Length: 458
Image 1 (cartoon, rainbow, N blue to C red):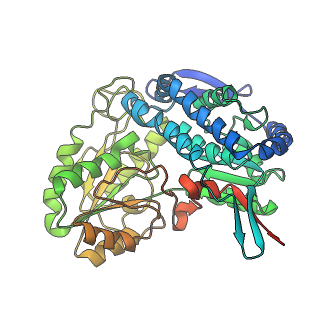
Image 2 (cartoon, rainbow, N blue to C red; image 1 turned 90 degrees about the vertical axis):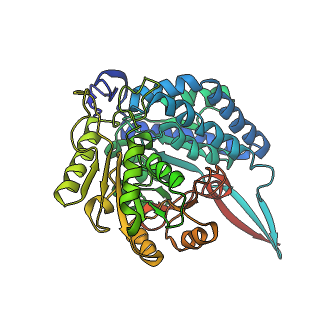
């Protein structure tokens, strides 16, 4: 857990408990100064040509690529992602996202003629961004890149648990030619710095990624100044495996999407919905797949699951595992407590529950850990009913015959669905239905979040 001492916050390696860095514990006054800088820089940056703004975003992408190994090792040290995941995802996704956003500039409809009206898309102004610890750099770049291309300036509060790559990004942005004051980083806690950003009258928009609980608070605070709020919140996504699915593909990939990054992924698939007639067969396949997930030192290339991002998160995950057992779910793999041979560190055991009731706590609440719940169903209609029966709607998956899977995907109340393990598309919109949030990230849809629309009649 991060702690504040003498106006600093300790950044703790969750594998060892050692302090790897300290960052300032910012105040509302620091937010005031950052907003003043962003406000002063806004007119010049907004007036800069779209081509030059795109070039800066492109150079940021290139600069991040050049520092990829430093980024990967930093994220592994500050939040415990396995080094292979940090290299192949944590450090790569931000590069791809920034490049894909920069490429939108040429063809985006910045102006449009509708009858006698000229419709103009303009920057919304000063953006306040509040980002989480699970994919610390990607979550920042997913906001910064489109905000910059749109002509906005930004005040960022990165997570105090994993704040260090924000500093690397600020250096890269300056080297890319981003003018002073356009991108401002204020370290600190949510109740202090996050609250100040949400409430600040000089901030025109807040973009937040994190828990639904905090998202509700940000919405309430931001409503006082009627600013725009974009929220990418929690998830409890369903992976629907149909009776004609290729189980050799569907089950291992489903386990991977529940355990990747230690399950600390808002778009994970922690609910595996399976035909009741094939439940036991699928459980066996899932347990076999889970046995290959080595838990250990995140700096070791053989490790597939590192520690949870903090000791507090480890205790939270452990509590849900104990709740699942108490509520009568079948423990098929793993269980509570630290893994064997890891008496210290924020390690949790990857866990699979079988025969889980659709309304069980472990099937309804976001655990944010390596816990997979296998839920049996009878027929496609019941599968859809169970999949949709949560307060969330962020992502999901369907495995089965192409047309049938597509029909199921269309019925899911969720913002993104993968069919048969389709690859990630950085230009496709990402965001949630229901209490998974408002707004979209990535591609054209993510860029539009950061623009105001004006009509001029003539």
